Image (cartoon, rainbow, N blue to C red):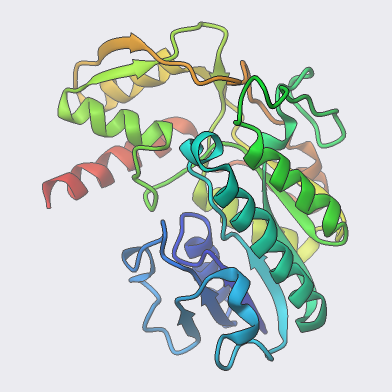
Length: 310
């Protein structure tokens, strides 16, 4: 078996590589290292069955020794996912998440003999009207005069239309040790609480999120390859909903630190709730969340503590 993993140095992609290698597969990984790191690949970068290429997705045709290869599976996890880019860098968000992904998908139609597993997002639901939100529920977006936020979501949704025979994994608020950037809420809260900094936070008691650990997402991708149905989309998310204030307090409790609340912070177009119905993934390939929020936060806190002590 030979698999291609894009975003192989990132949060989900690196965990997928580990699972493929554990199966004895040969793996080719591509990452431009804009967010992914060599540190994330330290456990497998010297594995004889792994080959890493530092390239952009749109250049796959010209990667020496890769452009003409055939693969049994493609796991496309490479993307521009920082929330600030949805608002501030719409053109680059479109370039990476649509144009480069489109090039990869067209290439894969000739070079992948098996399933194409695409990293999509729960962002595509916009402002959901039904909870928990299922794959067949309608999507609802703000107009462009109100916010740029949906540039990412619309790109992800467009790729589901463009490649209807792929398996699309709609991840919902992913976190894990291999992403400690302060652009995402959990690592941001942990770092600021550990430093004693003020938190800018959405204090609306109706605003909730559910979170899913990256390792659970990687498991879902492998399970979807084994038993998922090509052409289907699957929600992959956590079961527990929590407000941002309660999340901050929980992190403070686990870190044994005081939580200092500063001024309120809400981005334009921010959805009130995000909670996914994952029963389709359970029915089709047996996926269940394994790492619940308390365990995941404790693991993240310990990891970030060590990182900050270096």
